[in-house]
Length: 360
Image (cartoon, rainbow, N blue to C red; front, side):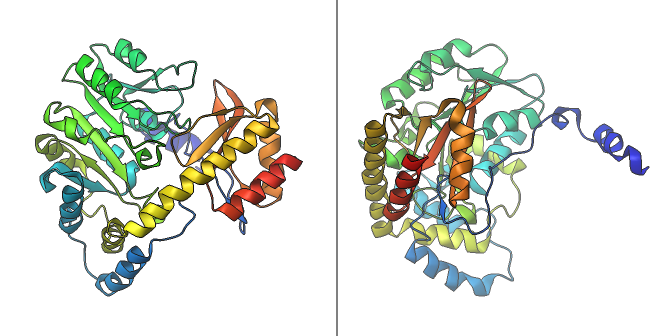
């Protein structure tokens, strides 16, 4: 059987997943000096999250409270909703997996942007549904009108990332309202607000729109501004009746005791939150001024990263920076590897990046 293993397991696997490519986070060499590839918070774990982690360690022999009641209560207070309107998962990837298992069926169509978070389309493929990609606008933004035109009788879910990863573009709350008003209520609209706190101007969350649109699901994460990406906590705010079906497909213990405790601590660390937001906005401005000075085109960003156009030199630039211990993300757009996404690091990291980039 040794020589036939590949064919054997190929035939055993579900047809829907056989041709899916594994997620590739890009190279991550050991000892990389500057890691600006994954939109992480390089300020480290929030002090209050660290304290909460240490207190929770002694409970590590126990199963966690399944639905993260304490965390949901804190989140409900923060967002002005009821705890029953919140579901917590193993990062937003876990939330999207739970959502797909609850609502996606073969032959369903799932709308998402042409260049956006890849997990949306992969979730659809795993469930046997068909991802439909809406082209970006000329300014590399998600096209609200394009999403509306893309809805058919087969459309089950719309994934709309705002600000969008990896372009950093932002739709206004008025555009979000327009999308919701135009979409049939039997189509779920998943609004991913993972990067909303980094917008230049304060942009209201769409959470208040849940009262009018029960088909809306607003998603948030602790991986970005709250600085605990490695602990994997994400959540969705939605109608409690909708969440009933997500709980049917959610892992029983989706969030560990340590992760839930760290998220509770991070929520209460306002000083860290404000410092992160200020740093990202200030350093993003410096980075864009640098690209303006040396003549590199980029997409104006409302997130904790900036995506630049590097043409056919993109892989060469990425590899040359890797040799210097600087890790950033190479992107494929319309079949060509021609964009680089640079996460906003610490001031000293950004200074080194700019120096080495200019040399290259």
